[in-house]
Amino acid sequence: MKIWAVSNQKGGVGKTTTVVSLAGLLSSWGFRVLLVDLDPHGSLSSYFGLDPDGIKASVYNLFHDASQKKAIKTEAYIRKTKFENISILPASTAIATLDRQVASMGGMGLVVSNALKKVSSQYDYVIIDSPPMLGVLMSNALAACQHLLIPTLAEFLALKGLERMLHTFDMVFHSRKVKPACTIIPTMFDKRTRAARESLVALKSAYPDKVWVGYIPVDTKIRDASQAGVPVSLFVKNSKAADAYAELLETLLQDDIDHDRKMA
Ligand SMILES: Nc1ncnc2c1ncn2[C@@H]1O[C@H](COP(=O)(O)OP(=O)(O)O)[C@@H](O)[C@H]1O
Ligand SMILES: [Mg+2]
Image 1: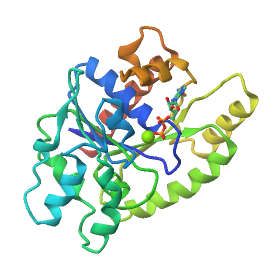
Image 2: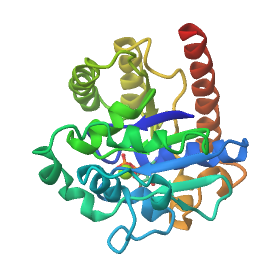
Image 3: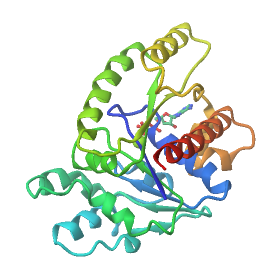
């Protein structure tokens, strides 16, 4: 089982869209996928028709079990979605209070990682959607993942934020023996605007080893698919964004193979 985390401290950069789009593709390529919603907004959960305000079993329970020193009943909190091979561990709005509740307890940084170990034979890929702020939830996402995906807008202002964020992530990863792989994904790219094209060049020259060679284009079908609550590749046959996500996925799968070979 591989664990990917999709993170960026900025909202509206395509995190949730990236999680859902990759999940749709992985599932139709025959992989068993578990999605984990660590964002208190619960957009990922809502995408699959779950209401984060009314949900009973959620990520919250993982932390509750751990804080009570009980065995974490991961399986009990996971639900199947209506899509074959896609399950979800949803967010409830209550997880917004976790920072305050568990900060004083300590030792809560590996709750998600430990919870996922219990279901490692049941899924091929886990994709975690992260909250925009660095707190206990984001730390858990960063600690659990083997591959960090950072969706980024091609804007000059985004570049500055990215620099700060990569620095923060490096500090968080400092204590990890094996550092996760990291891929920056240019999203909502509009090739017709010169500012976007120039920013993409700047992004690639600033992080030549980290930026994915392609980009996810702006595509109205993403919004239509999101309204319908369906991953874009399962929603329409011809979507430029879905094609780009498929290319991205091929790269990510190959990266993981290369990474495993290096470790062996
Ligand atoms: N490639 C794209 N083309 C057009 N709209 C997109 C694209 N990717 C995301 N969006 C839209 O942009 C908004 C923000 O995306 P979202 O994935 O929710 O970002 P985040 O999770 O980082 O806050 C959503 O309304 C989404 O439908
Ligand atoms: Mg989101």
